[in-house]
Length: 578
Ligand code: GLU
Image 1 (spheres, rainbow, N blue to C red):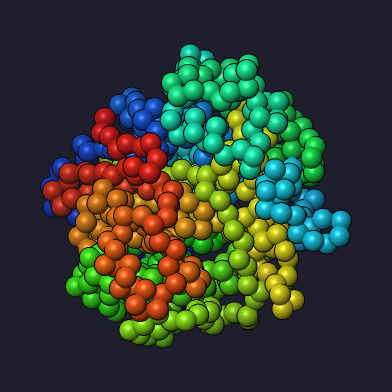
Image 2: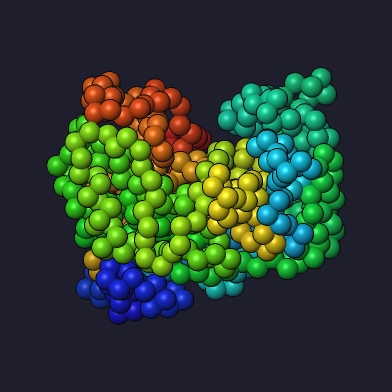
């Protein structure tokens, strides 16, 4: 408890993150807390009912949140292959209720030893187009989700590691029904996702007459079952031996073969990092540190809003959204300027979250009309780097698990773009995560971009697995979303929605998404036309009435210990109890 409070106050005052130690400790529930707030409640919220059921089954079998996470991930990789899987990466926050310890696990994909800043430049020094880069072998990083789960399992698992793959193996062997969303993505996104051009994905996803698998088609994946069996026997079987060789063969395939080798795979390391925690009103909001930009940027948005009475300006008010938009624009500008792999560049995490920096920048939220153009600030501890406007496209999945002991997993997991690089090995897709690097290494003014590719580096992520605690260090809620760089806006919306606007998890999810990164504000269809008109009157440039593919999953604990969940209707998920 003391350690966490020191950490939180260090963030708030002296900003020395190093003072927080390796894992931020959260106060355990007070001994006087009612029993039902400590045990007996569990929930899984994820993007597919089969994955949720696998997680619940792990909990019923006596597993904890990490055991359930392994089961959820191994099934998601099969039934939601467009979003995450054995060939992808992930970030996970894990709260151990018994010890009050919060750990951030980094399973981010890593660039091969052969990578250099010109990874995505063609022979004329020009950047490849985004999709030429995505579908090239250059985009594939050494996958980290499996190694990360193995690390977390070693720390916290209760069941055998292999148990986490039982449900996935059974579904892969016996078949699962193709979901409407999977069908739509197979059918609907060509020619940008040429699934029917690669033999492995063509044979898997299309009927003999070339038509995409229909909804409900019983899909078997023996190759996935074999991979899952190998990984269940030993997680290292993904990183060496026949599976590793199959991955490298797929990466080195035409067009534009990539440089990932078996030695890159064998050298992959999942990491424990220190979560980013910052007070927000009476709560403490914890998120993922760099190379994820989520923890810093979500906390910066909240920090910029804290001096404003957001509860008094709810989601039905133009003023509430104006503040949310301006805070988002300011925090996104800082994110684009500063965040990258901290093992390669200096990331001014403490400077960006310093009270004096936040309070200076929060004054920019005070105006009554739209700020015409927003730029990055200059926090302590940084020179001005190049500006990185790397786009990314929405794949990815977020899930939350609370187990019977009150332990919590908040995990965002991804193959990056929809179906990743489209290259398959062992029945699963290989990520295209390296396109989260800046494809150009220097900006228009010739300044080096912190998020440029380098050997052994991890690309900047927007993933924002988040856990919120109350003043006693008790778990309040966990949230997060897929959605590329919009993840930050989606996640911040749910936090403001629940913490300031008093919404339930489902109401916060359902609220139209508002993503303000730059001069154009994206507003999802469903927003009250009076709010749109009001924002326009203030001078904002809106891209309104658009679709936003968030995939937010939330579990919240009420004061009486009851858990309530929420699942994003924009995807196919559910929140259920064992
Ligand atoms: N690759 C993105 C990231 O790590 C996530 C992509 C997505 O959500 O679709 O930030």
